[in-house]
Amino acid sequence: MAAEDIDDLFEHELEDIYFAEHELTEAYDRMAETSSDEEVAAFFESHVEETGDHIERLVEVFELTGEAPQTEECEGIEGLLAEWEEFAEENDAGSVHDYYNLVTAIKTERYEQTAYESLVALAHERGDSEAEDLLRENLDEDEETLDELAEMAENYDYGSL
Ligand SMILES: [Fe+2]
Ligand SMILES: [Fe+2]
Image 1 (spheres, rainbow, N blue to C red):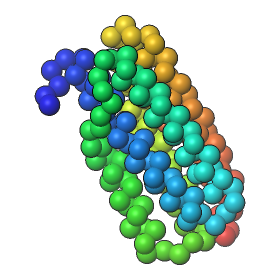
Image 2: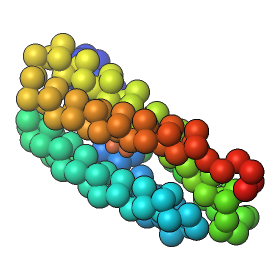
Image 3: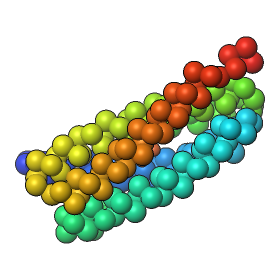
């Protein structure tokens, strides 16, 4: 569908992140399974749950726009996750894999951060403050996640690599 105005663009971006959040739920589950470090595995498990909350908020935003929730294939996230899949197939669990899982999550969360920043701005411009609040909650949580990931990466036992 051609996006001709701000409403179309908003919908396009909403469907894109809706797709991405679903892909991430599955991927983070797999990343939890392939993480040998307890702290790293626990991070992925808890973020799978939080991602479920993000999907619920997105459904609410769809309701506010009067559109049924639907997905638009998000090749950006698919590409990042395809890279991860390839790595996971070729490598055994261990410190190197754990670190790669962390770095992949930083990439995907930054993608989400950018998507939500723009959605918040578009919702604001459309005068839809309820949608704006819901999207900002997702943005805030993913930014907290990024802080957590940055700390884990900073304190990583690089000597174990
Ligand atoms: Fe999210
Ligand atoms: Fe996230």
